[in-house]
Length: 312
Image (cartoon, rainbow, N blue to C red):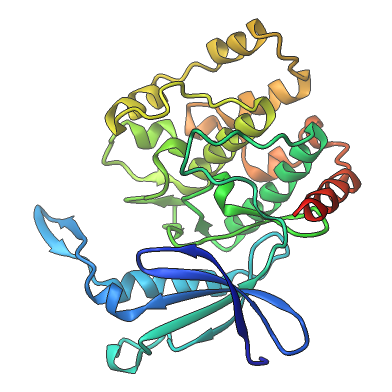
């Protein structure tokens, strides 16, 4: 591809920086720049047969890169180019000090930054929330066909382009399904963990089901502009307890007491997505056929995106 110029730092991270870049003909991309030395300094451990074992960063990074390279769907952020790293090589000596992953650029950015609960939740028109839901469900339906669980669905990882269409990105926590559709040791953001994960069970999880729960929490936040778990700054163990004891009947009743109108189709939809029993939780394919998504108006999302870009 054409040589890229880095024009803006979008995110500063511990192991990588994220830049907006531009090529010689004016096409924009996102560049994730990873630093080999930071990975070498990484000290993370895992429990293997009762013994603490230091994780091999190369295995973890290869998994991330290989899954990202699998993404070939309009509703997923694609990798355009990879420089400085061959995911099929186990030789660390061949890896550049800086590894650049060039990704599609979504002009409107992520739906919201979720690392600060004090920031106001964006006000998305409900028709736009429908569009977001359908786009992410299409991404999840695709992931299930290639046996991938995203494992970190949250508003930060859903990106909107200038046409108002959304793409699912950041596959750094993603995993391939086992033959029975399950995964083990899923990571991700605590707030979006499914009840079966919050229970601290050693049993494997259904990968597609935990992604559906996380999407349900995202849609709850965007639809109601409220967080479903009240103790936002609580300790992790208390948050896990809240998730395990989540009662959708009580939460919907709370919304009604605050004079919030709840569309009947949306209520039926969100109940199906936030079903605490993973085996009964609606799948992405079935959710796409739900009446709530029977009349999705993408032109409203396009107008929303245009207005947002004009305001920047």
